[in-house]
Image 1 (cartoon, rainbow over the protein chains, first blue to last red):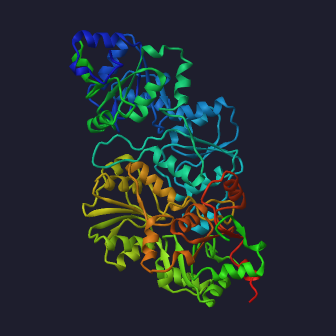
Image 2 (image 1 turned 45 degrees about the vertical axis):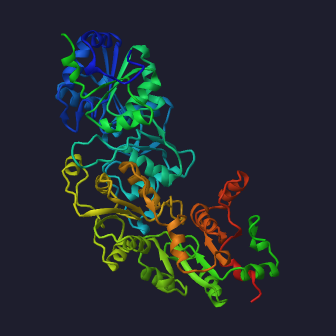
Length: 303
Length: 303
C-alpha cells in the first residue's frame, strides 16, 4: 500500500495508520529538520519517537551532522525530550572514526572539521591536525611557504565553521599525494532553514576541496553505501524498517537504496513545492509516505 | 600545418617557424603560468612578448586572475619587463564591471573577491559590499541572526583570500532570491604551482557557492563566451590570432572555441604528463602548437 505512490498519512483511515505502524520493527530517523532545528525541538517529534519505542520498535538516530560525538548527540537528544543512548546514534563523526579504524589506518588525519570528529578519532587512537582557525596567513607568500606534515595520510572533510583559504590549500596539497586518502562526512548542500538565512552544508566544503584537489571524496554519510553496510551488521530486516527524513536527496534516497519504507516530513529541507516539482517531473527519489511533521503521527493513532 | 596535430615548435625548421610567425597578427596571452608565477617573471617570456610586438603584432593580456585592476596588471607587467598598457589587459575584475555596467545594473554587489574587482566596480559607479574579513562570527547563532542588505542585487565570486563560512552563508542567502544575479570571474581549479603547495583557484570558491546556493554562476572568464564576445568588438580576424596559455581546459579550450591558433607552454598548470594522457585518451582540448616555455621561441627565429 505504501510503496506504490506517495501516501499522505493524514488522509489514511485509523486501520491504515495501524497497518502502517505494524509494518516496521526498526525506525531510523534523521535529526536536523526532523527532530530539531539548531537547538530547538520540533514540537511533537520527541513524543513520536518515544511512542515508537513504547511500541517496541528498535530506534536509530542517523545523522549526517558531524559536529558532535555520539555521546554529545545522545545528551542533546535527551535534553530535547528524546529517549536516546549513544549506541543508538549513527553520526558521521563516528562513521569517519569507524571507517578509518576498520581499514587499519595508522597515519595522521588532516581534518577540516570540528571537535565532534576530532574526539571520535581520538577515541579510536587516530591522530589528527587541523581543527580550529588555521594560523597560516591567507596571502600567497605565507601560503606557498607553509609547511606540510609528512605524517598526514588522510584528509577528512566535515562541517568546519573555521574553514579558510589556507585550509583549502593544505587539503589540496596533502591530496596531491595520490596515496593520501580523501574522506568526507556528507555532501548536504544546506542545513534546514529556520529563517531567511541559508547556512551552507558540509557539501559546500567537500565540493570546494574536490575542486582544488581534482579528486573525488569517499563520502560516508547518507545516501551512500557506507551507512547501509554499517547498519547491515545489526542484521535487521530492511523490509520491516522505516527511514524518516526531511531531505529527498539524502534521507529518502538512502532509504530507497536500502529497501526501507520511507517517510518524509516537511519540517526541514525538502518543501511541498520541491516535492510537487519532483512529482510532476517524475524525478526520484520520492518517499512512500508523507506527513507535515513527525508529531502528527500521534494524532492519527487510536492510542 | 599547425591545426592537424600537436606540433612541437622546437622540432620545426627555420622556415616553418617563420611561417608560424607570419600566420597571426594578434597575440592573446594568458599571464599566470605563461608570463609569470606569483611575482617572478618566467625567463624569456617578456622578451618573447616584446618581440611579437616588434614584429607588429597586436597584443592582449587575457587573464582569469581577478585580484588586480587593469592598471595594476599593466604596472606589474611593466615591472617584470613587458611592454603593456592598461587597455591591453583583459582581466576578469574588469570584465565583471564591464558586464554589470553593460546590462545597466544599478543595485549593490555582494562581493566575494578582492580590491581588484572592487576598484573596477567603483570605476563604473557600481556599489559593493563584502571585501576583507567578514565580521559575522562563524557560529550558528551569529550566522542565523546576521543581517542581509536589501539593496544587494548580485553576488560576484572571484579570488578572495578572506573567504569564510559567513561569506558562503551570505552569498547563499542573497542568492535565495531568484532575481539576484550570480556572476563568477572564472572556474580555474588551481593556480600554477611553484612548490609542493597547491594554491586553490577561484573555481574552488565558485563551486562552493554554487553548492550552497543550488544555482549555477554566469562565468565570465576563459573559456566562456563572454571573453569572446568582448574581443569580437575589436573586430580582428580570429583565423589570424594566436592564443597562448598554460592550461588546456581554460586557455586552449577558449582559443579553440574562438577559432584561434593555440600555443601551450609547459611552465604552468598543464604538464607533459597531463598532455600525454589527453593525447592517449583523445580527449580535447589539445593545442595546435607546444613549447616548453614561451621564451624558447626566440631561439628558433633567425632574427
